[in-house]
Length: 201
Image (cartoon, rainbow, N blue to C red; front, side):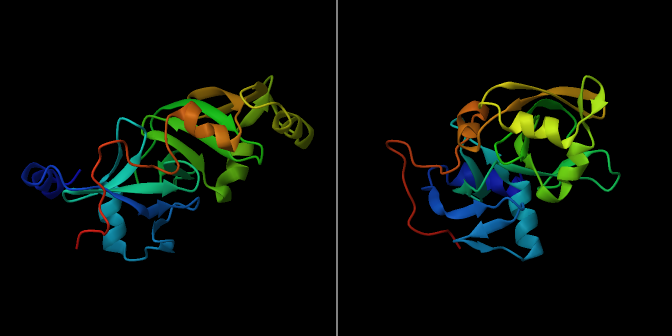
């Protein structure tokens, strides 16, 4: 996090948190009260000061105030970098380690990374399909459809190869992803937490 944020936290450690104002959509856009933020400097500040607490609630640390994010899908949105090989989070951080791969009932791909779980951007799904295989052979439409029909939390026959990572692909329903991957889509205050009624200026 930025040094000014850490200094503000030391000076004002008990500022009430903000719930229900901020969000992240499936395109990797930050939202404030449902509207996409377009100001580049504000986006950069949020990107640098975005993290998760011990309950899996992701937030933007705005100086001493924590603004919790409502997530349309996952805490991160992953995109293919300009080199065509490496994945990058929507906050601009390169992904170095992949731990697991999940396919939901609609065909969206979620990857567990060292930064947290992220859904691959829909514009890069063909890139992902090109890296799927069954028993070392390219995947076809029929085998992909069969994987989508499996029950949630089943292991498919698919393997995803990204760089040096070879990951077995699991089926995981969209609604089950938060409990399996340890995050909250709609963070709520815990008992005893102070709640802010407005964002700090």
